[in-house]
Image (tube, rainbow, N blue to C red; front, side, top):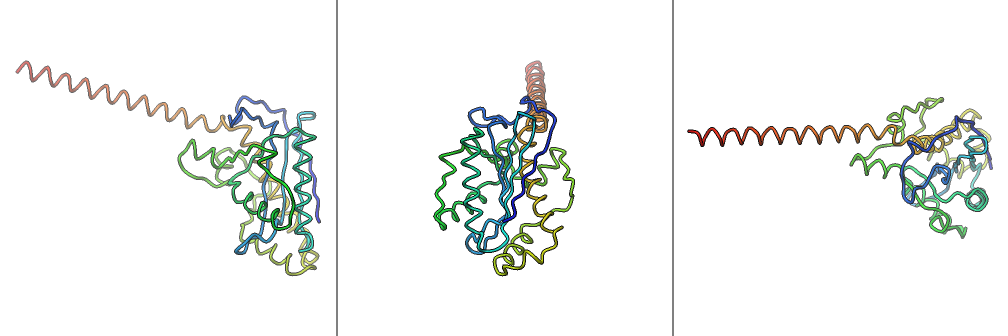
Length: 249
């Protein structure tokens, strides 16, 4: 099992622009979560588990990742995930879990929890916030994470994106061949982990800066409303003038 932990120092954040989710949940209450997984007809494995949370003590984002190296670790990564969630809930006081299109990840990991008899319930530990759904509430349309990052002016340091199909192929090979991981270039492993880390860290920044970028749309909607009202008033005035003229005639 590859275990990777990283601490990212950031400028002390404010809550002024954060997303107003259910029950006034703050980014300080949340864990940000994303999986890279392999599904063929049914979920086969979690390839990479990624999660992070904000620690206000030193204004740090703490990232934890697990990546399987062979099929023998398919259950092990689930056990590590369970321990991680229990720990941050009990010892770090995290009460919400933030995802992007989280239904996919929850479906996969819950299926595998059940299959391998790992007893854990997200609903018993966390309230769930899905940033894709929050976006859809405002915009009435869907969006992908990478496009949402662009909207929030987030640029990935390592610009190369990895497709879900390529990740699925990689973990298919990992399951089939116990020595495949040793033939994988270290750069490829690092690229997968950096890609996943960016996913969870960017969820934090999107949550934190939500109003800063979404408020523009609200202002635009209000402007359009005012323009509509002014147009209606103008039509009514013209109509009244026409009535007066017809009465005069």
